[in-house]
Image (cartoon, rainbow, N blue to C red; front, side):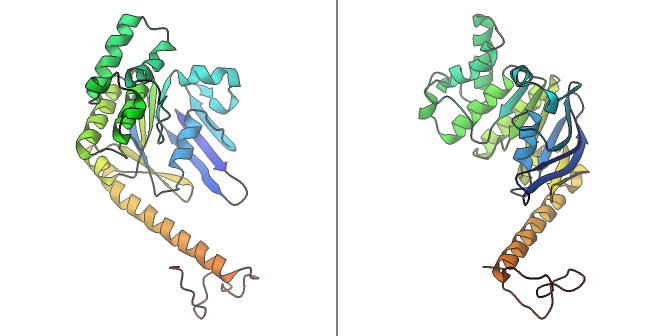
Length: 271
């Protein structure tokens, strides 16, 4: 997987990603981190072709995903497992049936399919709930079904958007162990998260997002970089609040000639 100068906006005033570039090696495990709203989920959507970039290239297995025809996208997704933040499960079907869907589209034989699904559900702690309708499961249990469905086919790549967000520490560790096991078999894994404890417990290469741009930093700097990104996001938010409070100006009233805030105009940005 390779991203080259990828940008994505939603309208003229919302630039989510700006010239993001990085490479993911075969079988690599990385974290994508950043403050809320930094663009983590948007980046994952570009990787499984739910959306296309405004500019730049997203290359997977030698193919530029933005050039894929609509008919080719389902074949791409057979090679990518996705853990969605909102799970996207079939709530009237059981945990087993939801997980099995990823293997049914591959035409796996029923006996092998059953063994594989039962194994994965047991790994995420849902062996006894395998035949329970999803609507009867808790939020944390539904999240584990989503993880099981993403990894059961052992795809070339797994994308996980906050996969431990609704889990206690024990279940979160089990889910990360499962992702680790899949990774050791050669599957590349990208986890989008802002969970400090998760990253500290299982250090991996970490790519940060801040201000729409990406930066790659050493593992030991992950927590410090995330805190800086969150601080910058808060400062940007307060700045926007201040600008809205001031209303339209000609630029000279609220700012100095160098673009800085004037010291003699005090605005409470805390709301």
